[in-house]
Image 1 (cartoon, one colour):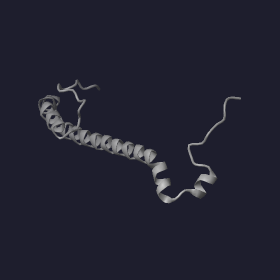
Image 2: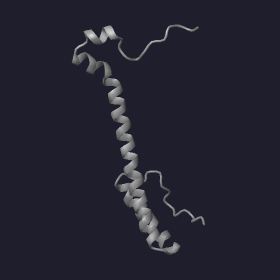
Image 3: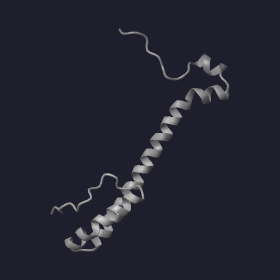
Image 4: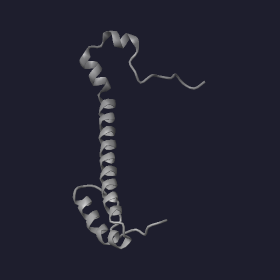
Amino acid sequence: MSGAQTSPFPNQNELMQANAQQLANYYAPERNRLFVQQATQEAGGRDMEMIGRASQGLLALGDEGQMAAAYPETVRYLQSQGFAKNAPLAFPPMEY
């Protein structure tokens, strides 16, 4: 067997002696990591939502030529608002 396994959580004796501030300090790094993860996921969700809305607007134009003409300005606008950072600046060919 390998060495002793330890838990990331305080043992029962530590819990009995700890006050609320000590517990808050103990769990703060994990809580902060989760807050950062949540913020990252929310930002990604907003990005996908805005790209989806722009895509629907382009598709509503119907004609591929009109979509290709409107695409660069749409991407520039989204990027000016902090979205679609990895979108190509040239209209990608449509695949059927």
